[in-house]
Amino acid sequence: MVRHEGKFVGHLDFINAISGRPNYFESDYPGRRQSLNIWNLPSASGLHVANYLLSFGIRTKIINNIDSDWDLFEEAYRSSGGNIPVGISSTFFLTFKEIGRICKRLKKLDPDMEIIVGGAFANSYIINGSPADLAEPMRKYGIKHMLHAFNSEFDLRDLLLARGKGGGFDEVKNLCTLERGSFSAGPVQWNTPLLDDCPALWDQLDAPFLNRTVQIRTASGCPFSCAFCSYPTTAGGWKTLAGDKVRMHLDAVKRIGGIDRIIFIDDTFNVPPHRFKALLKIFQEYDFEWFSFLRVQYVDEEIVRAMKDSGCKGVYLGVESANDTVLENMNKKARRADFRRGIELLNKYDINSLSAFVLGFPGETDETIRDNMDFIENCGVQFYSLKEFYYMEHTDIHNRREEFGLTGMGANWKHNTMSSEDAGRIKLEMFQSIKNACFVDPDTSLWYMAYLYDQGYDFREIRQLQEGINTIMKRQLAGDFGDNDDVIASLKRLHENRSPGRVQVINRPELVSSVFGP
Image 1 (cartoon, helix red, strand yellow):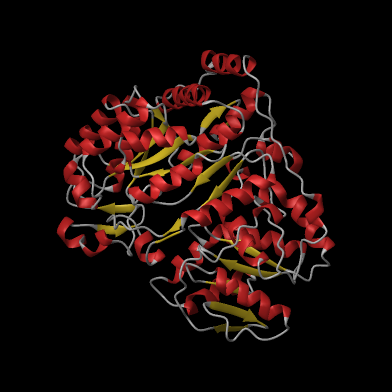
Image 2 (cartoon, helix red, strand yellow; image 1 turned 90 degrees about the vertical axis):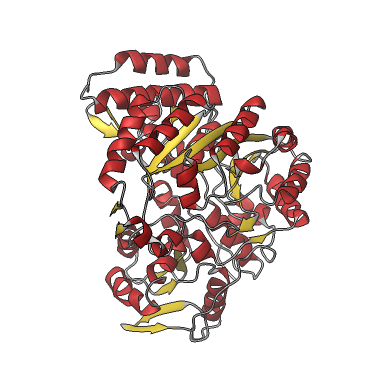
């Protein structure tokens, strides 16, 4: 955050302030939808589930950002008569605190509201426990149903169909229910990721399309086993969508009108390379621009050229470390030279990239940190992010903890060569020292850039904006909380000399009358 006009604001609200847009948190709901806010970018989870449910005759009203769209939610809920379930996706939550905030607000509107919670957090909460562990928070927050499978679309379908028939929920898999004070847990079953069976009904959804971008996945899981990552454990395998099915989804998105940018959220989008080449040929049939994650060690000149020709505007590179010993400890299946070669190719074809680094992984030392610094400064990195190692039990490094003297958990840890406190200090020192690349907040990273691009900023302007913000943060970290008039004046001139993007809400009035079902 930066201190501006007597208060701390996030980066997008700082841009709101200098560009004449309303401050997000000080605006009414229509104003919030016109302000810059990363969560106004339509997420993938609601659209994905709505696609699937619609094939069973179940219509949904998607509320993308409850803090921007509360008035739309309240209007839709009241118009339904209140006799509908309300689902909360827990994809981005790390604790029950935020779920509790939303539940409290929902219950204030209707104390009898039937709340369903599912998604990644619900799954992670029991991964080292049991469904019974959900009973206490469900009682505390007034949640009627929790679906705890990692892939819970099937279970949500069965829950809603059983509810529609007025029957019980005993046969619904991976479901915990709290009814009349009594807690029950149904059978536990692994669900294969939903890909091939998900229909392409994008153009039939009543969805919150803001401006020009949607998010899609063409694969689930990950074929790699990076030692710091829990995804191989929770996702349970890797599954890809065939090229003809990808084309069906692109055709459906194209029929919406006004959507011409896509973020592919696959963790390993370009693996295996032969599949990626086939997808790039498909993309060349469309006018979409796109962003994705990229395993940059698997690209060559032919692939990068095809990426450029098919509309690629930016990629997220999980570099993690530029030291070969740390990369080996991470089981990254890549070396520093691979990353350097890949970034050089991306730069040659003018494809924007963000290189993400993890600081403090077991084996990290002052020497390996210097390797990271040198790589960011001298190897063509455009944008970068820094984040401390986060220690989780359901990761491979936990099984090797004695080898590295690794203790603690989560954000608080130490091992033979570094502690979380050391990593936090090093992160700030690196940020204040690096000059040749542009820092971006690791919690929003690629999405921050794709969202600003969606809102009409080109990448030259995005870099100018973020470098100005970084200059202010560096001054303030050094204790200078002056007005920063020189930086602000420069950024205001940037806005005065451009044609700003405008949020375009794509209304679908033909669908609103039949939102709720079956």
